[in-house]
Length: 459
Image (cartoon, rainbow, N blue to C red; front, side):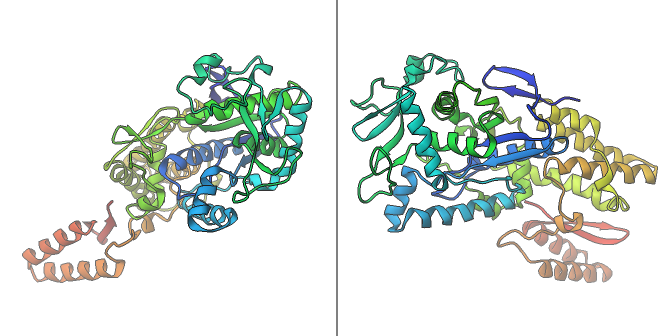
């Protein structure tokens, strides 16, 4: 089956046909490292990790996710802390790596930093100026949007509509209000690099064009990011890259994920409703957060509320319960193909809700089958399929005993269960029920079976 992807550039669902199946190229805009990542930052990291897993299952893939470590927000954080920008960016890049690893996000093949690409940035700007697509004004170098006829094609609005309501800096040195900065001067207290236009620093947009070009080539297969990047960031990337590369197509497929809304309101710092990944990891395992982030189709908004993690934990309990209760699949799941219905869902523009439904169908079939060999085969297929979503990678028994931050310890749980067993053996059912209630209050569910008492944590 072919993979179909929705291309923002054409506003159509298209068959994915890479230029070279042996080397599929994908560039995703990564974090600006000045604060702890929130779930809005985590969503594209998880979404494009799923896409990378799918692509790797049939192609050779080179996946680049950049690091923006030159930015005015980083400068402000460094100034406030009294530290060099390199200290701020390194600190928060470490936090980003830790949090993404906790969510099961695999590292990209290449993770370039803007600060390592200054020579290439200066060279691209020099080429744009020489070709008449950019001009110098008052120490700035700006891209002339009127020099590129297709400007606005990605966002499907004309220039006036693009500027209306957009965060476009108005300055008297611009030829057109929509012209965007390629290079800007730095004062003494700000970081800067020497260039033909004086000491300064690059604009945000040019950084990604250079990093994508240097590591993946002039034309890449897939470019991804959040909806908020369509304009101006990705629109400007297309303009400057196409002009710098003599009209060659910059990216063939453009993919964008929807926003995360907190209690039906768009998440933003101004509203004070930012939810960081590190805060969520104190409440639930990273795998539950990951499942929540793929529970809606990637192009749709994701509604985040107090019930999301609880529901995700319950769903994982059901899937891990199947793997725990069936023995024998562990030895050969890596040799088993993913379920065809599951794959069809992922191939249909990364339809993760339908793919998750296919996992639950597999779990139900495995649990209800009277044929032990069939149960083993279905459990193995469940595990193999879930691997493409980055789920079910933990030991099933360990999943039910994962200890969240500040939770009752495993030793305490087992002591209480032993005390309950003693009370039951003495027919002291009042004490036994009190201990069960105590465990439930502490977020622990117990189940009496022929093999003894089993327990699991709940979110």
